[in-house]
Length: 318
Image (cartoon, rainbow, N blue to C red; front, side, top):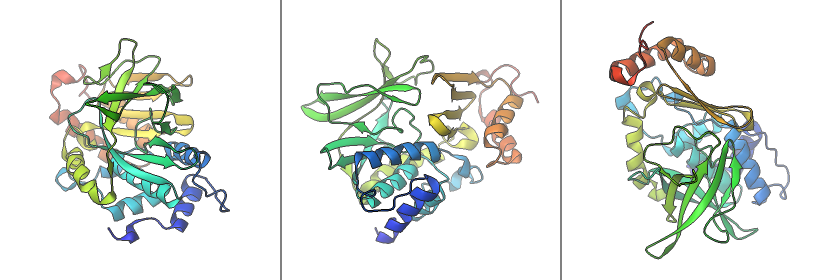
């Protein structure tokens, strides 16, 4: 891949200053330390949204994964995107700062394919590996998660409203296999395929360490592309939208459910009971980036392709 697609040091420092409010002036401040890694991860999770809003006006048949040049240009604008693009761009930011970083594939909720991309950073200061995810996963985005710990279960950390831990698994004599688990105070609404322990820990993702180079990512892309075409995953039909706010607050709209985090870091689910309510919520939170005309078309398409039994009574009434 041509090096022109990577970020220059000036582009990295400019992005940090303009979009993440991180101003690095001297060589000591630019050293790839744990302190800098933490600053970048925290600022990225607060400032760069996981969002599908810029796909709204692209017909389904024309949707595709962004090229590396598009990832670079959208990334520098700070508009966010889906998991693949946000993690590739964050990878380039960390690499541009001198971190030793690798791409790693994983899967969500015991899914059949390892179609989610994240990053593993090898920190020279302590010789340990850290899991970094720049996407929508509020249970792993704010703090780097250490993969080198004593025993089978890592210490618990707090990420937004979630308690999070890493479990080291041994499968077929493979010691470097990990599962990331989380729980929260009112843990309703768990993914139906998720593994849940007796004490309420949900297995969010699992993976065996298998680093990928940028040149090998087309293998992951073959799995990711379906998410851009699948009518259940694209925003006009699946209504998947998400925004992060300062202090780790999250608002997510998926189908007919609004999810947000309240002041005491509890996760709250608010069912959307009517077409009018859906349009009102969407306009309130996304009206600056999506026109009302597009929102109306989105909900009309959702209604047209959704079985009446899957929507609340009277939902379609205007």
